[in-house]
Image: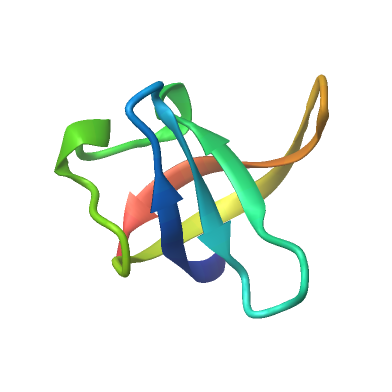
Length: 65
């Protein structure tokens, strides 16, 4: 699993993870595991699996570290 830091969360149920590269990783609230989307906060470390959605790369199985 890859690790990163939550860069931005929206009130529409999605966010972006800073992966440490020039490319941020999109994730949807339905891909958050072990906690609810509302329990996440910007700056929090998370682990995730890189997946592919209809609009390109996305993080799946997002869990706090």
